[in-house]
Image 1 (cartoon, helix red, strand yellow):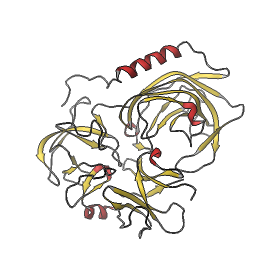
Image 2 (cartoon, rainbow, N blue to C red; image 1 turned 90 degrees about the vertical axis):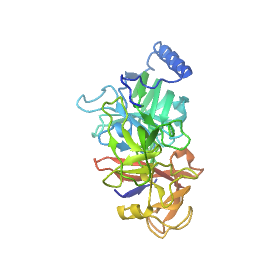
Image 3 (cartoon, helix red, strand yellow; image 1 turned 90 degrees about the horizontal axis):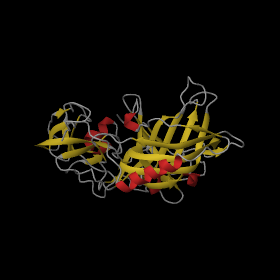
Image 4 (cartoon, rainbow, N blue to C red; image 1 turned 180 degrees about the vertical axis):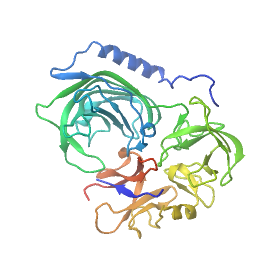
Length: 384
C-alpha cells in the first residue's frame, strides 16, 4: 500500500530463555533493585507499578512509532474501568547503558529517553505524568524495537501540554502543585524469539544460514528465517511457517533473500537491504525500497510509491514522493511549510541523527490491519 501522509513539526526443541543481558548489566540491574527495595516514595507521591510492555509489532493493530515506543499499563489510580497507559520512548540510537531521566526536564519534546503515563487515558479527565527524575537502564538491545531494561526510583509529575503542540513531538510542563506518582523498580522485555536487527552492521543482520527479514517499513526491526535453498532475486519460493512460537520459519531462498508476498502472489525471493547504507547492495535493476527489500522501481511506482529525480536539498518536481536522491543518499520529497515548493529532505532513523536546528519528521504508512508504521523518518529545518 502506498504512503499517504508525511508528518513534521535453526528451531529449538524446547522453550529457550529470553536473551540474557551481559553479566555486567545483570549485576547493575540486581544492584538497582536491591537499592530500590530500601527506598520510600517521595513526599506526596503515590507508588505505582508497571505491567508488561510491548513494542510496535506486538500491538494489535500493529503500531510502529517514529521512534521506538513501548506501551503497557500502570497500576490503576483513577477510574478502574479505564486503562492507565504506560509508555517508554527511546531514541533509535539509545545504546545499552544507564540514563538519568532528569535530563529530559519533564518535557516530552526534549527527552531522548522518556517515561510517562496517562491516567484514565482517552477520557476528559485524563492526566499525564512525565518522569522528572529516576534511572533508566538499557541492559540489552537486539534492535531499537527489541530491548530489555529497567526503571528505578522514578518520580513522575503531573503535566500539561506546552509548545510545541503539534506533530511529530509535543511539549509538556509540570502542573503547579500537581499530583505525583513514583515507581520503585520495574523491568521490561520486548525482545522476541528469533528477533534480529536488519540494519547494516548489526550483529544479527548476517547470521550464517539465516536471513533477517524486516517487520517494519524502515527495516530497523526484524525476525530471523532459516534460509535452506539457493533461489535468488525474483524466483518463486516456498515459505514454511514455524510450527511453534519457539521455532523459526524456513524458506527455499538463499541466505540474504526473503521469501515475501510484499509485492503480491506468488511469493518470490527478494534481496534484503538497508536503505541507509552507503551501498545497499541491491541486484542490478532494483533499488532498496520499503520493508528493506530490493525491488524494481518500475514495480514500486504502479503500487503508489513515487520517485523524484531531485537530489538531497534540491527542489522536487512532485509535491510528495517517497523516494528522491540516489541509492545511498535517499530522501523524501515533502512540503513541510504547507505552502511553496517541496524539497528533498534526507532520510534518517534517529531523532539524534538530525543536526542543529533540525527536527525529525516522519512518513506515515497506514497498515491493512488498521494500524500504522511511522518508522521512515527525515530531517528537516525546524521552525519553517
